[in-house]
Length: 115
Length: 113
Image (cartoon, rainbow over all chains, first blue to last red; front, side, top):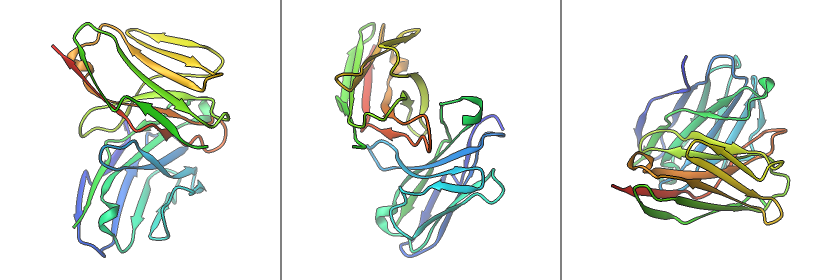
């Protein structure tokens, strides 16, 4: 596609529920990142995929958060037993370091609200 | 070691004026310093970026000034326009390895017509 796409654009859920957020990176981009942006703050790194594997998951806040990228393209961020503190905009970004590209291209984000 | 500090939090500039936003970093291993622009409801978009082998980079009305010894870098927007009103984030990363971006807290810029 022309850019990074994320679905859904908005997700409202109740405390304790399970949610999945999807990211479609730019075609051919091998590197994929998830960030979380709380209101009025800069994005914070969650996890990085190079191909299918999670090369760095040091930003995941706890074991309720998990992400996969089974075929090296689309990625899904999964949050179990959601808490009100998980409310934020979840951003996905992709890039292709193999082409010498430093820029990370961001999607529009998924706004998650946990009631 | 991972922090990037950004100031000011908000900035109001008259149309045609110069907008200046400053950032400071701690981790000397950082070697890539981008500035992102974000409009409400949108994801961040790269505005301009610099590597530490140069002290200044200019693209149109946007200039990054970089001071390696002070571990500081700044964004200058010349001839600021109302369409520049947005939130600006500085960031830093290492170009090798995970390349995960560490963002500043953001500056909400308002350009008055």
